[in-house]
Image (cartoon, rainbow, N blue to C red; front, side):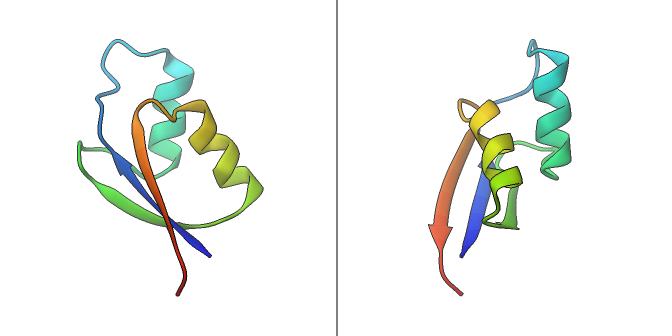
Length: 60
């Protein structure tokens, strides 16, 4: 299973930890999409910044 992660809200005026998590997910610009494997580590990162992201699951 894969996850499509899209940055839909800006990291401006966010806590530094949240900015680092978004950067670690590989997202830099608004509406940028990255594909990640569905692992507990990625799920945890997404959970911490879920208010900034849009996530979709899909099978390959």
